[in-house]
Image (cartoon, rainbow, N blue to C red; front, side):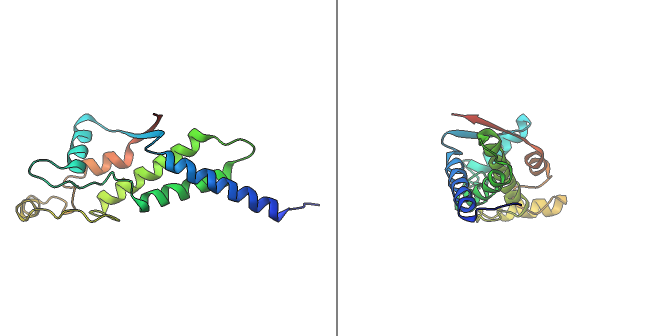
Amino acid sequence: MIRVRAPQAMATVGALRAQATALASDLGRRYTVELSLPAGVSDRLLWFHGGTRTQPARPVLQINAFARRLVGDRMRVRLVARTAVAINVLATITVGANAAREVWAERLTTSGGDLTLAPLSPSWALTKRRRGLDPRIGVATGQMLGAVKRAQVIVRMT
């Protein structure tokens, strides 16, 4: 006979959700997320994210409420699905970091996704059209987007 104690199970799931939420909030504070990107691509992504003297910032690497919710959801699923007695914090944080990378790639894929990015200047939009480049913001050749999608995620404790 298998006996399930629903109140205990629900309490355990609630505790795991609380732990996942706490771990998700540690991303960016106690843990940093790095993407392993080629040097030229990482420079371009940081320029794109932060802007320059002549180009507006397009903060695709921002962790906003949408990204935090998605990261937390993925981490909760990881905890509930895989937890036995002890929590593997690094594995759970890594799941969250990979979810953040997916958010960043989606933002590049969709010209902002959950963010509103500054539009392309009319001259750059025309140049892209003439050269047959991808019209999406931040994509042009697809090199940066492809590198973000394939990037290895590195999680470090600060």
